[in-house]
Length: 140
Image 1 (cartoon, rainbow, N blue to C red):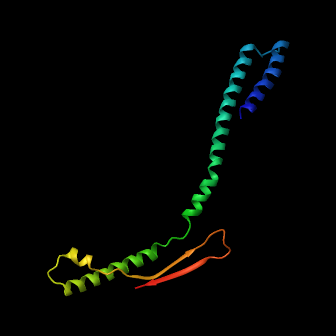
Image 2: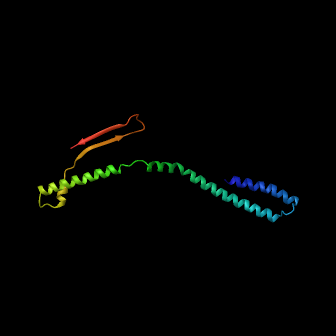
Image 3: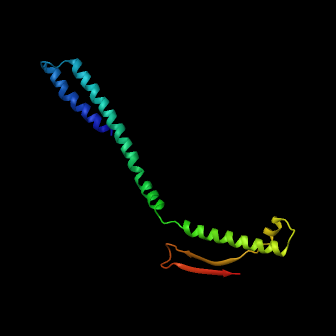
């Protein structure tokens, strides 16, 4: 923070200024001013580093949440299996309709494919309830 640099500058001005007033050997006004500028530059750099560290630290909670969410298990295998079964079932129904209605365009066959809903299950969990609500739905 800027206060640390300011405190260091003040301390150096106090002790270095007293050395200049006393006329210490090997210690001139030029050396004092050069050292004062170095202390100020180092203090500014420290302030920049400290600010960057605070910004980085403020991201840790968000990064932890993202890491947790990205490591949760996925249902991609189950979705792939369902999609493959749907493709196979649609192909079977389309072939059946081609046999039943020869000469019709493919689009007409797809329009006549019945819609099935089978083995639909869902679960709803809320923080306000002490128990999950499991339900299932079967329609044909």
